[in-house]
Structures are given as C-alpha cells and as structure tokens.
Image (cartoon, rainbow over all chains, first blue to last red; front, side):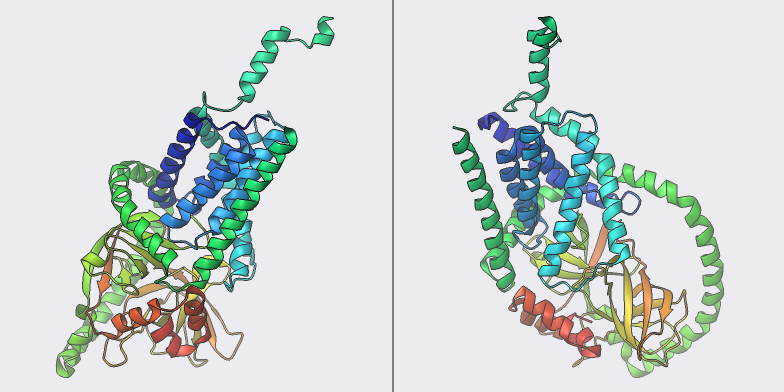
Length: 191
Length: 318
C-alpha cells in the first residue's frame, strides 16, 4: 500500500479536521438528537484512516484528539490516545481488506464511535472516576453509536469529497482502471 | 521495501501512543497551574475569538436544527405545561401571603444584604460544548478580563448551570451540574433538611440528592434548590435558593435518604448564561485560589473524600 504523503493531502486533512472539530464544538454538540450528542470527531478520524491508510489515519487521529483536548480543556492525551488507535485501525482495515460494500462507512463509523466511547469509559475508570457500569450508561453508549451510525454516511461523503483527488490511491479509481483495462471482465473469462 | 514500510508504520503508531500516554501522565499529575494547563488556557485564549465568531455565524444553523427538535417536543410539553401552570397558580396565591411576611422579616433582620445581590452577574454566551459523555462542560465567551474566576457559580433564567472550572483572559470553561466533579449543598424547597446533590453515577443526565436526614419527607415533584449561604464567615460558592431540579423519586435504602433529581435547566440547549462573579477577599475567591494550586487528581479526590456539609461548602463549592 502506497502511503506517500502529498502536501496537498496533508493540507486538506488539516483544514478538514479544523473545520469539523470547530463545527462539532460550536454547533453539533449543541443540537442533541433524541437527547444524544452526535460526535463527528471519531467518524472523521476513522474515515481519514479508511481513505488514506493507517499512517495518515493514526497521525491525524493524534492531531484531532490533541485539538479536541486543547479546545475543550479535557485531560490532555486521552482523546489523542483513543483517536490514534481508531485512525490506525481504520487504516489497517483499508490496507488489509479494502472493503467496498456500501454499508462499510456506516459500520466503520459505528465501530469507531463504540471504540471511542468504551475507550473513554475505560480510561476514565482507570483515572479514578467513580462510575460503575450502569444500564443507563450502556444505553447512552448504544444510542450514541446508533445516532453516529446514521450520521456516518453523510460524514463519509463529506470526507471523501474533501479529500478526493489527493488520496494516495483511490480504491474507486483503481476499480475503474481495472474495469477499463480488462473490459469489465477478468482476463480468464476473456481468454 | 515492504518490511521497511511495516516497521515505519509500527514505529509511528508506538511513538504516538507513547506520546499520548506521556501527555496523559504529565497532565494528570500536575497542578491546575502547571505548564500543560497553561498551554491549554493559552490555546483557549487564541481560539475563543474564532469560536465566538463561528458561534455567531452558525447560530442560524443551530437554531434551525433546534427548531425542528423543539417542534417535535412541543406537543407533549404543552399538556404538561398547562397542568403545571394550574398547579403553580394555586401555589402562587398561597405564597403571596407568605412573601409579604418574609419581606418584613428580611427588612427587620437586615438579611437582604446576604442575598444573591452580593454577587456581580456577568452575562456570557456559550460558544462551545463538549460532546463527550464523560465531560459535561461548556465554553463561554467571558473570562478573567470580565471578572470571571475559577469556581464562580453559573446560572441561567431556569436555575443552576454549574461553576467555572478554568478561566482564561477572554473565555472560560464551565463544569455543568451533571459533571462528575460537581457537588452542591442543596435542600428540597419545602424543608430545611440539606443534602449534597451530585451527578447520578452512571446516569449522566440525572442528579442524586444524598445524605438527607431520615426524618426528611421529600415528595415527588418538589423542587430542589441550593442551600448555600453568602453570610460570612461560612459563605459558600453558591448563593441560597437557586433552583437545581425536580424530585423524580425517593430511595430509602440506607440510614440517609437519597432522592433522584432531574435538572431543571435544559443543559443541551444553553445559549446565554450568567456568571455570578465574586469580589476579592471573599471566601469563594479564597477557595478558588486554594483549589487552583492542587493537582487535578488530588483536588477531585479531596472533594470526594469530604462528607456532608463540609464537602458541599468547601471542596465541591456548595
């Protein structure tokens, strides 16, 4: 998998991250859906990883996490750690499986949100917040995962649109190229 | 070539994870006046004008989404509000007579100077909010330059919102009453029995009024207010009588009574809030200075380890 870092891609990822994080803090967090706050940042990190690979995924995860922690005065390093792992995981998913199903962004978004929420919970327990797992907390986590899954598809479209043209190797372009050179058929069937 | 790429990828991942853990450890271990905290405050100072501008520019978008949400809830709220209006009208008539007597008593004992008027309210706009279940915080556009200090109580037209956790020059971070670090001395409106109100563990949107005496007779639907006082020398961070929430159920499992409380303030829809700023030399100001030099973990654990009224009036700012 080619992970060459073009400056155009880095600039696009940086600008997209800044816009999404500030839009999240200023608008999305203040508009609850069914009493649940949508969190775009884990979706952003996962989709960057899914489009750009594990290297850019984990670096952007770290940067977005640091930005979130700085802007919201949260425990520094906590979100960075979780988002680094999410970005890397999504990137490896692309590199190893390269999933093409239409529902992939939805599942990856739900998975990233679940990892973020469970990761936060575990870290908070380890940092000494006295909060045993309760049914209500689990309900909140499940609801947030579901709501984020709904938002995942438009978010995927946005991230893909913003990064299109600068991606190291666009799976869609690769498919199109393969179809063009083989006439849409496999070499075996043509033979 | 492939091995080199794999090695580089793993090295970057390990480097970032280690860096995150180092940041986490350093941040958690240092006092709130430490270097990393200062960096955060500096960052907030730099980005707060941007957040402020973005907040103003994107307000129509937020209002539009809010309008859809409010319309969906309006019908169910209407019938509940009508019932509540009838109940309140009856209570108003009964309270008017008591109010006259109360005013006479206040004037008689010169108690009016101990009220909320001893604070200086500073109106602020909410410019950011944490989406995280574990951080119930909002960012406001007023900071130290407007007289806002750490631990100042924050209210809005509905009731108690929280307290200032961090203040930079032009912005401040407010811990909402549902944040795990909060604890407020409170009483149920009709009684004098006080307890400590804290977020309900595992239920981030609900509160728990704990340590009520067994003799207290709380009823579902009663209002819970702050019981603090601003009378020196025992003045607490929160002035008395600020509405916090409404009793939803009562538990009698232990020697103390605990009461489930639903916050009266819609914490999902905060726009304008008021910070009740304190004057130099007051107990609240002194507490803010004392708490600011404690490490984060120590400050929260010292708060949690204290009990009863002491916790309410000192550690958690009751």
